[in-house]
Image 1 (tube, rainbow, N blue to C red):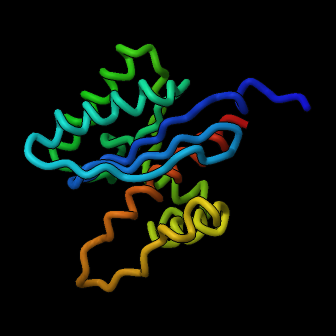
Image 2: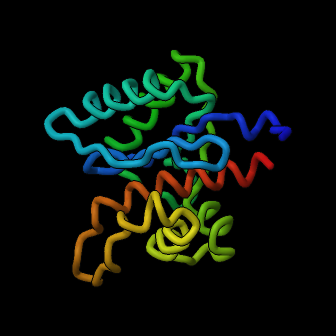
Length: 167
């Protein structure tokens, strides 16, 4: 079986959040590992430390992040600073970085820039039932906070869209 160079790329996708981050490691369109890491105290230094550990463990070819500076993206200054630290960490480790906006993710996965994160999560849980179906939270009510497990689906969406764009 012939594999193209893009199929051999190991992707580490990170979705930064106020609580920590979600991550997904993907290779050959297979999710090797996904999860989320919570942080307390000095959140940025803890996040960078945990991301560095993931990078040493999985040795990714590319790091995929959401573009926090994209039009329509409203992220806290702390998250923007963390984003820059993570990009710097990838550069130190000679790891390519790719950024995608939230609207590009929704358009690529759902064909609609107005789609919701939950719709993307449902689609990804169907595409990867063994890895993700058990992690899919129930749809939240308007007055509820977002479930922390949604970070995982944000990271998987980044990895899947990277694979789609590489083909």
